[in-house]
Length: 174
Image 1 (cartoon, rainbow, N blue to C red):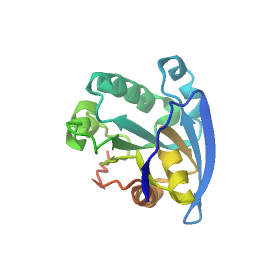
Image 2: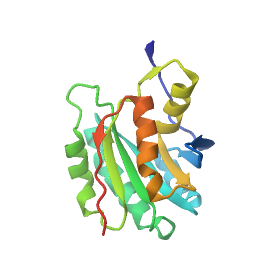
Image 3: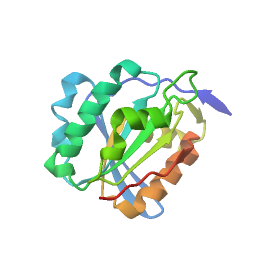
Image 4: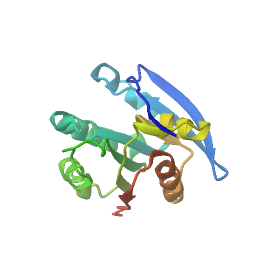
């Protein structure tokens, strides 16, 4: 029933609207290549939540991830945005743990944003249409429009069901 799904990096951006428990989510999948990063801020207006998928096997680029994350969080249009970090590829031997990634990204110093980090392994998905849909929606960096902090647990639960993720809720407040 499970199969490995291979994906390619996003070139430019994709947009998708989904409804979870009668809540509408407008999701922007934004390419992470260096050449595209300068245009990220054009998507920030009305963003209420940011999802970042970290490659837990890529120790060399975690510093770049941290740098870009803090640039995003400092942007005026994201001042009230929540943050969801997926520590992806947790099925790979010798990957960084959630604790390591949290430490490298200094997430405990993020005081002005509600945040959550959890493990994930998005490469293995079921063949059902719902699971494939969920996989597409969670494989990259997303900016979520029309989402409030009370929807955090709902979307985390939905993503966990589809991705087979497990994690702990970490949501500090200023």
